Length: 233
Image (tube, rainbow, N blue to C red; front, side, top):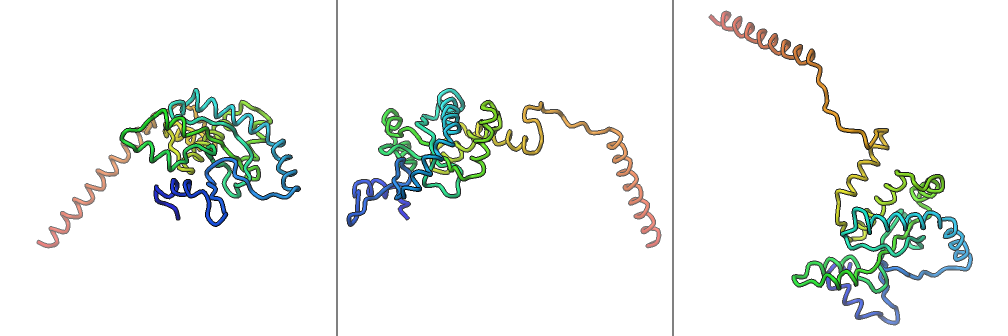
């Protein structure tokens, strides 16, 4: 549904249908109906996760302005608790009047693209996190214990980059994401991700034994062939 590249600009011009306003779920500030109890609970959850959202925002600012994504043109405005997520741990949304992922792809594909306009209209991204997801809960406990935890930082940055990809945005340096995934996999397997590479040593005795076995097998095959020829004669 609405998969054509012209659907989005058309809906933006239509704005509403039979008194119902069209709202893009890819944009920030989506308003959902809430009861007073839900509002109070959400406010308490925001306070609980404030250490994580502040730490995550600082981590992503370093990544996008000084780290591997400094040339990607991605700016993170804020990290906040999501009201829309149910299963996914995180999602990336753009500002209310910025380009969506589809619009960015269309504009970047133009022959005479205006890079300054694309940079301005791309807008700052917002990372929304799911407070009920086990990964997010674990991250909160880790940064409360140690804000310099390398595994927590790698996990936070991998979640952000995978959320960009899932939302349809491009990442400038896929190798940086891949390296972080390798680091996390190494730690999960109990391997030091910073351990130097070593050439595998093959025991010489085993090689010689294998060569001798091959020669013996060849000799046996030749004897068998000779006996068969004698029998035929």
